[in-house]
Image 1 (tube, helix red, strand yellow):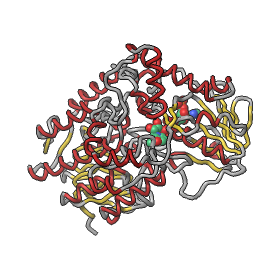
Image 2: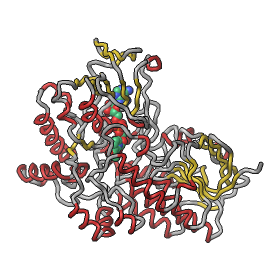
Image 3: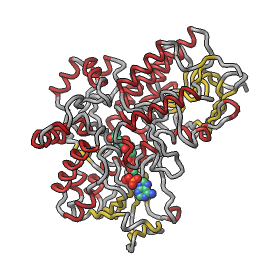
Image 4: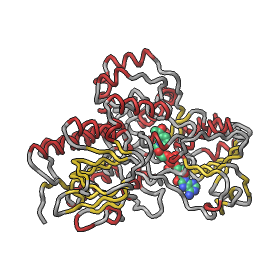
Length: 531
Ligand code: N01
């Protein structure tokens, strides 16, 4: 039987994949989205742990490509919970009739570029097919990191990962539960699980900064105001360094008086969530300014946590924001409960997992459920876990072994006609993801359309431009405090991964750059290269 052929294969049916399908199909291309889950949603499908919600206000963390959509949809809370975001994505899929071109329960396992035919040979869990283009809409935080604790395979209780939460209801009533990790996912889950479980043990390797979400029902007046000027509101946010509202772009913490600074930190602490880091323009640029913000948050932790020893353990010492800042609803307060125990893994390392629970330090913990909240192989993992081979059979995993290099986070040398949405080298995780991915979807779709109009068959980045670009990515990061601690931004959460800072910091200059590249006929990319 002849192989199925299409113009574009899109991998992943999350925010990016859905919009890609809509854009490319509207432009007349044949497109299929392959999704390994049995339903759409991407990260919002998999991360359904208790307390999962967006920590960017939903009036911002939503599509803006269709004015009617953004006017019609009403969010019920300031920060939407995972089920509502999934409902929104299903609404979008139904509204634009997308589901008919999504193949669920279908994993893309391999993709190989055929240089003679100039097309991708795609192997899914169901079939082999051919496509001119392949777009990885696989998300930045979608390949779970599962540490290989000794004995884990013999554990007989319920083993869960926050990033791969089951669809069935999970009830912790009367259970003794352990959670390993204290990143954003855990910080959201802990207060909710603590209310249900008989006892919750929290195993912490590194304390984390978290800002209260002060979440609540949507303020309908604010919603109406935003909706009355949605395009302007989006543009104002986009002009900020991180593409989200509430960021100060001029005043410096180091120039402010102590009282004034405290007052301003307080206002942002109460109202801005992640935007706390935007209280002053120099917080992520100057380590003295950063320390002022860090001291403020450490003091807040001390005020919230009744037991001074626990408060001490929960107080991070490193630069605030160099690990992804967290936003919570009652995280620190959860440690005031009698049924929550914090265990410091630095003094009580996990020795092994047993069939009944785990051993850490001198203690053995008997558990009903063990939750790994241990994060992701961020930014590259979802792509390198697929066997992708470009020119001369080069494997992408091998090419990225010493560091992921990409031109603008969009194209990779040796991998023609392959695009990544919010790939390494783009602002992605250091921006509001939804407008960032919309920007990329539009750039990629426009590029493919331009190629059709200009009779070009093959586009690729070159090693020279991507080397230069990644040098710039790191030079920009060097001017900030982002590299001053271990984080998944620089691969340090995965042992075997290159320790390299991956996101480009600065939405406005990045947007200007990729717009310019497109206007200059995709400057830096080469077309129809012959070997
Ligand atoms: O993962 P993380 P996450 N032994 O990597 C610990 C986004 N997100 O799933 O810091 C013991 O942040 C690890 O310790 P350490 C958001 O961008 C968004 O929580 O490496 N501990 C850390 O405490 C976020 O940043 C929302 O020392 C181990 C934790 O596990 C990103 O997803 C909600 C360990 C992992 O924290 C990832 O968050 C939730 C080991 N072997 C998440 N390995 C929104 O609201 C790891 N740890 C949009």
